[in-house]
Length: 99
Image 1: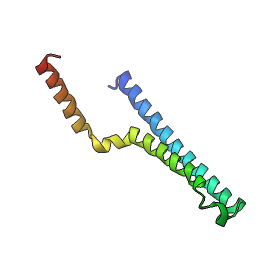
Image 2 (image 1 turned 90 degrees about the vertical axis):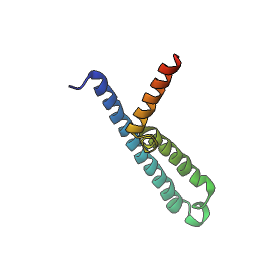
Image 3 (image 1 turned 45 degrees about the vertical axis):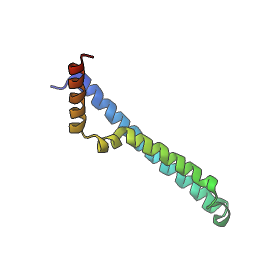
Image 4 (image 1 turned 90 degrees about the horizontal axis):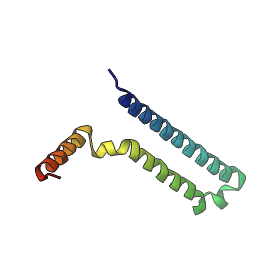
């Protein structure tokens, strides 16, 4: 039987994933619009390689990667098994030191 806390945590994870996917879609949409406007509206040779045009893409990518790291990326470093072993280790240390 699934407890309400487990359901709540699972629901939050799904909402977070939906927000990540939305962030990725918005990131690509905005950048496509910016580059299309630069290419067709202002002339490729004048503005396409301008550094100010890449700022949106770079900072948007940093935001998407940060959100990904918060949701999924940490599992690449700490698997559930490793995380549980660290928790057990810290609990045992606290018991032994009496903290």
